[in-house]
Image (cartoon, rainbow, N blue to C red; front, side, top):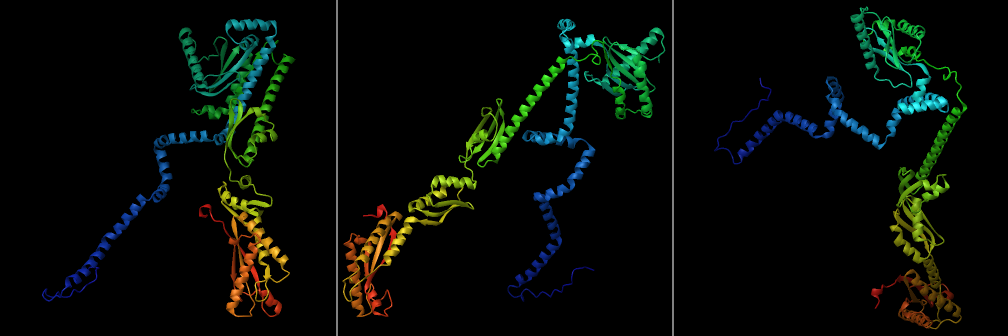
Length: 612
């Protein structure tokens, strides 16, 4: 039985009976059914396709999925073959080279624990060989024998040290080989410090082959037994002695004529001790030579040397001049090392001083043409690097070369100093930097305030200019004079435009202060305006009072104009009783309202182009 719901479809009426528009009504359910069917059949696949496209097109999603499988993929590929290593090697090598070129200090710090002991060991061995050779050479350099040996050295082309060693040496054991008896493989090898050995494995194989060849030759030519051991091989100025054991053979390279007692007293006990200690390892030897590192002390005990009695270092006392020469050499090296260390420390201190100085940026340091070199950027307001060199270090100025390019730092202290140098604030003005803003406070002339508003925003490092705390000296004085003018009141006789007697001093002060106000106005780029206001008391009609107040104001204007005050700077108005100066509760107060008062103001100066 189907899972789809049972639907009852009504009988379709005849076409002739269907009303208009019935086709559209039937198509709508069909379209809904098709959309539902399409959603059920296709929508899951569309969602999966959308997710796949998201994984392919989104780099972040793709990178996250790759990061989960990348470690395991690397492990499997590395275990299969070397192709991954071959592919990554050029990139890793290039990155390592670039890292070393950019900053070699991390690599040096990483390998210093390994390189330090190796370098010290190499230097120690070289110095020991040098001292031994120098000791032998100096002992004979100033004697008749030494002169003869020098002639021999020049004749044979050998060094003087080699000739001395040849004539004074009885024997010296230079190299000791421990060789597996069955396979002929080298188990361990040791050489004296003054010998430069060849490849020990090759030498061991050749010695084994030579032994076998000699045994075959002795057996074929003389009937000797094939297992008879070979004890010695003569190689000119050297001999190779063999001391056999049960599983290994000791091969010793000797220069000179060694006594046979060495075999009994030194070589035989050595090979026996090795067999006693390493018996199981020798018996089960499978090619791994690492366990035989422990026998090196046995081999080192075989490195003996013996000189003639007259030149044996153990019996011959080193002359004083030898120790004196060595002491002088060591003293010279020590002094040179100390001077170099002190010079480098002073240079490092100088660079640290430069880096800690504001306004100086060090970009490059090093040595050029045998002199110290430093280059960088310097603000002109900062301390001179040459002064730092002279005052804070003990370096020789002639040993230092420098190059400084100019720049302007945004350090607040330098921005403030730069602002002071450019604005030149007068005494009484204080400048400071607050959150990148230049703030000015105090008392200053008007013209300096105007100029500072124009120049301050152009200073490098100044984000804005605030001068609300500044007091304009000229403007402050003008405002004081204006307040004094506005406090004057010139009184008139009742009903007339005649001045009340006894106001001459008041009038003189008014004229003087008005002239001063007009004189100071241009100092703040303004023009003075004086308004004369006429008043009357409340007695009389309004029309009469308005006319009388205007006449009083005009009378005052004419009076002030006659005292050298420009008429075009003054205006006269009458207000009658509308603006009384005092409440008229008494006769003195009514007399005070029969007067003229004054108002002052400042207007902008007209531009040159506006003047006619």
